[in-house]
Length: 111
Length: 115
Image 1 (cartoon, rainbow over the protein chains, first blue to last red):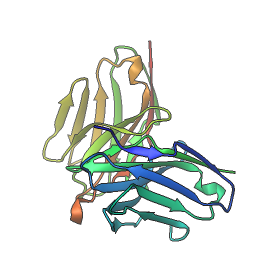
Image 2: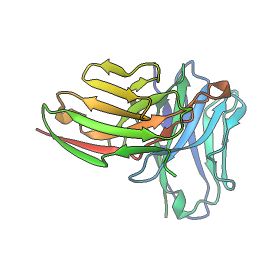
Image 3: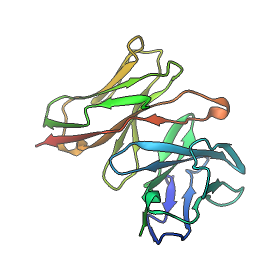
């Protein structure tokens, strides 16, 4: 049973470009979380999604960030017009019975 | 405002020793307290978790002690090994509608176990 799959593992963007991060949850899991981790810090909740629904986006910045989890395909975290402060590791997790299982993360570097 | 406070920030232990990491929380509505282990370049991996109806939970060399009245919980790693060298995070959450597990994380403890 494959774990949570994230891609790309590393992404470099210039300021003003768009970043798209993808996450496929574990088989049988229908809940996806996105977290952001800055260097030397813990993870910060961004958004919680079920298939075709955003359940809780209280941690998402109001502008430039969006997330979706379509009926078919992976969950996508989209960051428009990236700035240097967006440089971080973005982790996706899927849940089963309340326990979260994390992917290996996508590391975004904004030049 | 840090809702989950973790200490120490870093810890060095000799092989075979006991590693102890502490966390304190503020929100009495929290009902789930996991510990995660993270190696460099990897995602966090769930180690062990506890709910407030028990005061201790043990899995192998890892033990969580929970003090509800003090709003504190700690991770003990017995017989620490060099392979345990990693960053450890405590977290807390409360069950919301739709089974949302929005974890609130501590800032992490970097553990180094010397051979």
